[in-house]
Length: 304
Length: 295
Image (cartoon, rainbow over all chains, first blue to last red; front, side, top):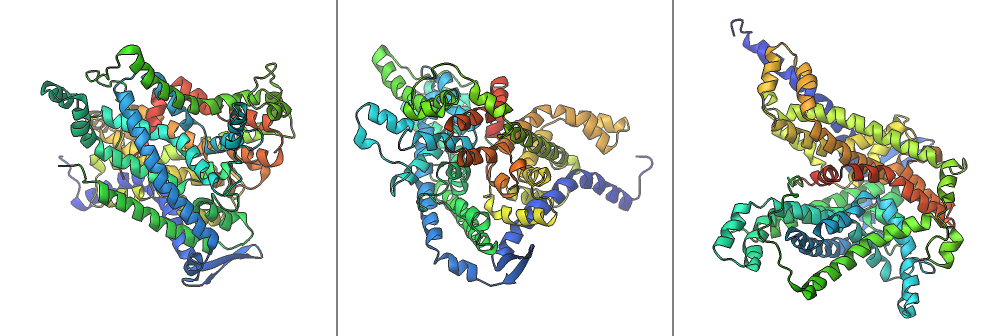
């Protein structure tokens, strides 16, 4: 304090540690995430093809976006993903909420359940996809073998080889892999509700059902919305499980936007990075819109 | 933010009263059924890995006649399969990406988390960092590919290390910043009075205090790096450089008929996460749920 530096120099010194700490992460992040984000948008207005090893870019305006709406496979993949993003979270949130309450109220064996339901989270999407690809195998899969063993031959469908069932299987398998996650998050939300509140309700003579409906669910609501959004985004971006389970097949019946982007960009030899970029940009908009709608419609429903 | 840290002390005052054996059975039966649906695929996968493909095809749910380890032995020692190579690739990639993530996110988290380093547009800058938090990877990965291609890094460990670390930065920095912001400033002040520079204070005093958060970030990211597939098949196409997840996809293609070997590879590939989980399951659940940030 005795040797106060001139104000300007002090000001400059203040920025040095900030630059040291925040600089690296921001520079890295701008280079490897923000630049690619804008580059994807730029790509989407161009045709980008490799010519003699180097990528050549030519501006095509909105052509990619217009072609999207004439691309039957893309429209099918949008339809599949949208169905999934409604059915999946609905299924997941209802069961996860019920199960979280049951565990919160300590049903017999609740510790065992919590550990068991959490295990699918540990394994990769590839493992989940492959194991269920075998379970649903037509000839020797566990499901059909079991059905035949108990005399239900008629029920033993070619689950992954038909027109109607594969998308249901994909939805189920992803649900199998993720409901435990939503359950654990909701359970954490329930545990964060202050005990005094529940105490007070009990003293006032509230029944269990009243406490759940009037206090716990409203208190849990913000967490519920967060978990719902996470679940929704999870379905919109899911790639691993689908890729390993069906690869989008048969005949694109389980194609999702994520798998189709991958095929158009790197799988098929269509050799154009602009077109899949347009898909990615469009899909980014749809995801943002979905999250916005969930927030808008549900956020203030229960608060009073 | 949702924290799973406190869910071991669930209050007991509203224990669901399950009286009488009928009620007990009524509630236990459906939950047990659900648990079976969750567990059976694992059990079946492990059983498959101890059998031969012929056995599996003949009788899908038979037990292994003898406990044979030949699938595992073949996987590990058969040079034509080269599973060890893929395992090693995954270790290098996950470990490398983790190192980059930890260095950048602890530094950044400290800068963003401590009020002494506040500046005018900090909120905005932090907001930019959190922007990518939950976006679909599709919106980034095509230019990430062309970038790596331009740098000549495709089919090297570097491509995956650099991009994995980038995708992990938002949530990791966020968690580190939250943790650092909760630490008291007395130690920091004392260190500065003793003449430590900003970096010395960080490395000698504050970083050691952040060990729990570092652990969380490590577990969370290790899992997602180890299990990643989309970038792994995009940035690396050379068979020898594949990560374990990409290699397993290849097994089903190439060794398509050999389900027994494939099952054994699935079991082996989940060992690292399984061991970590068994060693510290609570920390692990916390790490996996810490990623659920309000957004």
